Amino acid sequence: MNTTILRKTALGIAGLAFTGGILAGPATHAHAATDTHPAATTVQADKPAVDKTKLIPHGVQGDQSHIDLNDEQTGNAKAIITATKKAGMDERAAVVSIATALQESKLENLGHLGDRNDHDSQGLFQQRPSSGWGTVEQITDPEYATLAFLKGLKQVDGWHDMPLTKAAQTVQVSAYPDHYAQWETQAAELVAHHWNS
Image (spheres, rainbow, N blue to C red):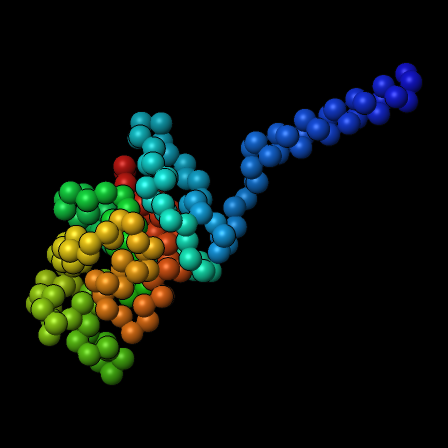
């Protein structure tokens, strides 16, 4: 076989492999500040897929954080999703809510923390009875706390068109307004995985 044919065959195979790699995308997906889409998730055949463009429509801001969740934390994420549906709001509202709860409590339904408490903040969203969020019993109920947060979110004009951290901060009025941004990717992954479960 002549060397020109061998060279053309090798280049053709390399070109197909390269094109296949571009079309298929990377085998792994690292979270980066430039990432504008949540990681792909596996959806069972009997469940409709979540429209990923609704989850992170504005891209993420800054470095993304991720924590491993235990059963209680996962259950709280599911409770936030259920409450979001009950409020008649969409997947993006669930992403904002879960990212907020990840920042405020790491999705743990916190009671009073004694000396470590921020005033009288409690629950998933660290809401304060003294600020009118509800009683201690109410704000430590995941459904009530989520519905209260979403009621505040609904009152933010244009929240859907804002970066997540600005929408969350407008409701929460945190001393650390930019910290919500770091949880957007993990919140989107949770919503993609559990919205239709």
